[in-house]
Length: 212
Length: 99
Image (cartoon, each protein chain N blue to C red):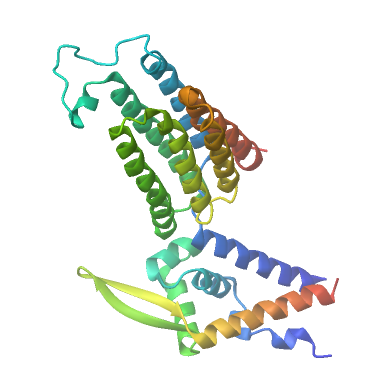
């Protein structure tokens, strides 16, 4: 019995160390919730501009130019930037707190590997969507975001928490459905980046981080 | 039947060494500080375990520099990988045998 217990303990140690050394596991569920809340606020702010209730341009007297600087003159651009930065910062804060609590280093090999593997699909998606916007295909931006983000999450799950994979599948399914309802992109975007993030975050927090 | 306890490698009879080997199985190479953070042990303790593993040709050491700081990285040798796999198999056998 004690021999068996010792072997089990050893195997358990081995497994734990393999996980710790190869995956970034400090990702907090609360990061998901906070990023989701930021996305919902962002979508709410963007809604009147996307659906034409308010004028898109900040300075309507500024002459129209045919290059990227025209985006800087739209409220939407600044709402999108603000949402992105707020979501990233708030997500970082909760993950930082969790890593301090667990005693795992925040910036190391595992974090670097996760970062690279998230950035590749996200950057490719970003470039692709920007060029779509150049050609005026705005309707595909929201489903495009969902699809590329879903792929990034599935890729990331190998270097972080396994559950990210299922979040990724959900984002992709949502993105594919959205392809058939192109005019409703913002609602799908809010569901994918807002509600799914919050649902995932609550699930993770409830199962792994709640104080017993 | 051979008692699986004889197949357990005495070299791996320590939590620290199991930790070092596990981390090296998942990573091509790891440096001293990363190992120290992962295992949460002191420099001296880690160094002595690493020395023992190196002397037995389980791991190989590569010394380099990042700027002016020394950067010592560790890798698993072929022999080490085989030995560690056998050790895990022996552990599994022991668990199964007493079930």
